[in-house]
Image (cartoon, rainbow, N blue to C red; front, side):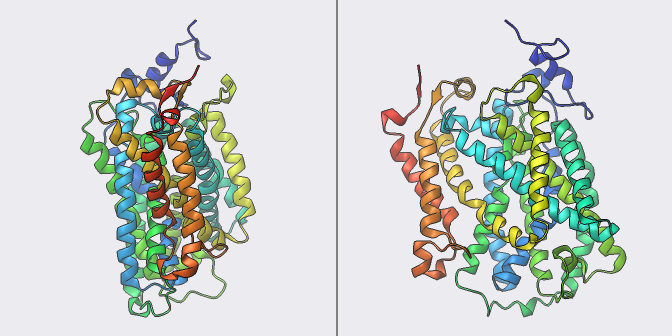
Length: 471
């Protein structure tokens, strides 16, 4: 029996009708995008990945390294280049699954985790993206709007939430269009503001003399986690591209977009931390303090727009990850409706974090890489071992609810757990190794990835845990 949508059309026909319409609700969820519905140019991925990083969370990473960790300015620059470079390369690679299979990233990952086992990374990403990142970026955007318009901060939060959820509700095409038109505005404002901040910064004051042990590796981990935090979204924004799109273009523009935007604003954030801000200033207020009034107001507006641009992706990809769990939803609870639910939950969390946003920023930005490192290790190894398999054979696994591959989720879970237990170095918890060797800083993301990779190589040799079909 052929299923139809509300208008009586077959699913593929509804997706084909979607085409490149901007103000239309995207009908696609976790299912593959058919060839007749493919459209778009890979160059568009550049602004799709620059715009969401032109926001205050990116700046704050540089502020953390110098202002909190006490790292010197130039070591901070090196750590930013290393961490962001690694994350950007990973992001560039994962987007290749989009044109090949036409599915979201968390569906493409089923080949490494099986249908049920994939609930581990998909579930984590739906919470981190749809709730965690939503709350973090909403708070910074709300405070920027509050400083600009002097509206109550709670009203500003609701305005921000409604705008970003509306974009995610309509879906893929509106997201790409919104990022395209915010790209020149955000870039121009932040370039001018950054030039002023860099000209006034006292870079020599950040000499690293007060850095605590391990600050460099902690900064590498934080910047890697921030850039690699986009990797679970990779093919969400490439899956509509035609299957014959050159691979190098599909990889180049997202990777370059993430690398340039993150390194640029993180370095500016590090420089801004050398300037003395007024006592009691908010995080955004401290950043714009050196700017002339007119430029400060434009920067506040850009911070608000950048937060919305980032959260449009977070809500959208969070809902795709939730749909990728394989839960059978009624027609009234498809992807677009799930986006509304995530918006409500994320807004509630953002509301609860308005009073101590600085601490929540720091904690969140430092731990997001813990699970992504092990997840990437399993996904990369799976891609390597499947390099000789045809697109058709791998694609069949991605939609087969009976497909199981427990080596992947076990390796990821153990790698994440051991990485945190042994190597985490946070305010609330210090792992076994940093207690004795504090100079290591926090390498939980790297250690977790190595542990997960080695364990995956071993577990995939066990027949009971290797790929099979259940009855």
